[in-house]
Length: 487
Image (cartoon, rainbow, N blue to C red; front, side):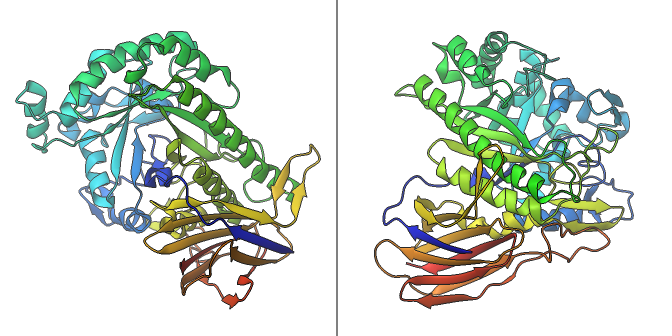
């Protein structure tokens, strides 16, 4: 399979590093077991936070982490998770049918963010909360003034503010966040955001946006918001793929259908971005984020804590998605894959004291050079897979960004059988020295890491040949590559 990638001479919008954000919800073993084990655990920990998870996540430099949900957020009352842990109430996690000890609360989350070097993104309770509860949480986290809440924060171990910039005003308020109409939510949002805007300094307020099944939500929400556009900084989309298909024993057709879903994500972002641009004013732009996305397979049931295996299929899907996100860099300023450990398309899987990182994790790690890079448009000429319904999947995906005199070139071979012979060329000029070239591939597209067998899939060196026509690369079936080259 032969493919030519031609890189345009001029760069466009810059990739916001927050496009590589993540999401941790109180669900299954994401927090309890994956992040928090408690001070008395035999698993090495820092005040209850497991250190192997910290070490793994530090390596991918997550820019932002969303918490505490998800559906959990709209039944979470933040005061349950502060103060002495022995005195915190145990609640019922109504959406995921498990107990909630509240051992991991605001201070623990902020400490975890500091340990892994990420910015916190807090989702406030709209569905079962109140504007005053949300406003009080923001004051507790961010205020410097001498108040009862800031004294309480200090008494609980943190005299300095946490400085939380990103605040979600509810989650999935069309569903588990209250089963609201777009107009009803817009009126609630206006009320909450009015008080949040005044209480926490320089904050980014994020509104609940649509999912693919309710595309009318965004337009109706923004129409009802008219006149108060300055209260919303970003609209948050949710988009899951792979419903009903198996995580490992999938057919080749199911695999291609999953990859074709990336074009649906592309259309979802484009539609929301157009609406947000139209609703923006000269003084205030409304951006788009996608704060829940990823694969959701049949194994990920409530009873299983939404745990699912993670294969090279997930890595290929993730790489194609990021390449799509880059094309929307002018409007898309954050994404948060679900979820960080042990739930859905996790970066880290744990089993007792054992831990492994997933193929998806390695895409996050390899694609770091794209962050803060200016997007160079590319033209890809090669074969494509055509599905029975007429949708297509590119045989080779490509994205290029430019930063500090270096081009970061990511490539994806989507074919599960055939290697791809790829030539990468500049429309103008010549490449400089190849600085780094890495490949992620398994023996098959179904290859996976597990806590018992953690090194099946990991990056290796990639051979790159410089020719007069450009760079020549051979990509094995179902593989992902990252090449850094001088300009």
